[in-house]
Amino acid sequence: MNSRHRGIGGRFPPPLSFEKLLFSRKGSSYFDLMIKTLVVITLMVTVMSFLSIFTTYLNLNHVCRRVVRVVELEGEVSDKAYDVFYRLKQQTGLSPEMTIEDVEYCEDQKIQLRDTFMVTMVYSYPFTIFMPSFAPPVQINIPMKVSITGMSEKYWKLSE
Image (cartoon, rainbow, N blue to C red; front, side, top):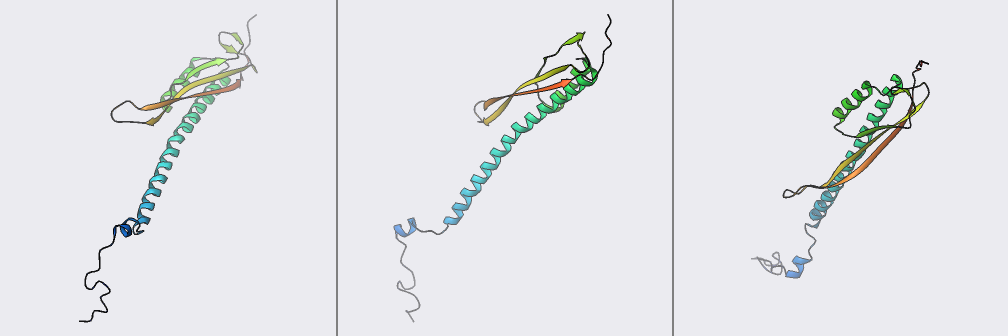
């Protein structure tokens, strides 16, 4: 037989030493890829969870704008404004507190033409950080406040 083609160890090569196994770079790219994928997925989930905060703020802003517009058109804080408020609360799933401030009523919740008012909505968004299976979720309440100023567009003829 020709032994020169078999290498130094003959038919069976000598086993790798522990040092060669420990510092071998074989397969290291797979571990790098797995770690990078895990980091990217974690970052994507984090960004998506923060987007829910901004979406909630935009919904709160939308509800406030709609209520302000109804009060501007009606010229009073009427049942129609509260109906719009409660309907939008159901649609968005939010439960903000609404107050109407800086308003000068002429009579019975009526706002005279070009008089201004401010609608303020306050909401506390529960942001879930961690949800363990054996305990209640760990949450942070993020306070949100939207204030929009409106101007009455209705003229009220007052009785003298």
